[in-house]
Image (cartoon, rainbow, N blue to C red; front, side):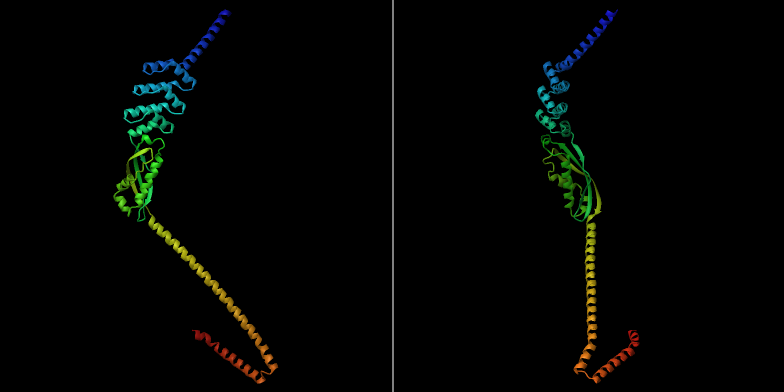
Amino acid sequence: MIMSEFQIGFIAVIGVLVLIAIWIIFYFIPVGLWFSALVSGVKINLLQLFLMRWRRVPPSVIVSSMIEGTKAGLKLDANELEAHYLAGGNVTNVVHALVSAQKANINLDFKMATAIDLAGRDVFEAVQMSVNPKVINTPPVAAVAKDGIQLIAKARVTVRANIKQLVGGAGEETVLARVGEGIVSSIGSAVSHKVVLENPDSISRVVLEKGLDAGTAFEILSIDIADIDVGKNIGAQLQMDQADADKNIAQAKAEERRAMAVALEQEMRAKAQEARAKVIIAEAEVPLAMAEAFRNGNLGIMDYYKMKNIMADTQMRESIAAPNMPAAKK
């Protein structure tokens, strides 16, 4: 009984090992894929599929791509597909693009398709865009006409992929930037905003004539102005800002002149005070001069009394005239 259990366990282990060995064999030698390729008319041997496993290339991707291309009438080489996969390319996408290009009578060979794919562009989407043009909506573009009125325009740009320019050609951002520049230039050259509102198609004609798709990966088919809105009166706003600036400058200059006048007034007051001080000093020297004249005999006592009488008379006249001064002012 014990011997029979051992035999059963040994047989189970052997069975598991056999299954693992069979799985490993069929993993490295994908017979199913080889048979599918053989049935589909694709010439590929088991050794190639075995070596793909060792090079870490999924045979299913290569075989399915070759089957798709062969059914579409394309001549594909397994080594070229494998090399493109090892280079980091999308083999399935490239084959889809080649089949679509052939059906649409677009001149696209395997070398060009792989170059576009390795350049980081979606070659299949590019082929679809060549067949079905893409519509790109531009963001609102604001521009000012010569009369100072701001216009805000939105455009729809219909583009078609240029297969020959996909490698090294500019993308959608460049196309949108050029279209926006053309819209601004067209509106800015208009004499009045009313002219643009009456003929919005004039913007499309002017922009298309500039050849904005040069050097890009797209061919511009049409530019349609979807909407135009009237914005601010930029000209009037600029005039108001200029008037405010001129007013501020005038106020600053007036304040400067006022400050200079105040400074001049203060200076004149200081000079007047200085003159009064000199007069007081001179008046203080008069008694000294009179005493000196008495000592030198140049002034007699009668002359002194005459001068005193004159001074008293003058003071009396001033006291008499003082009460009448307010009446005179009235």
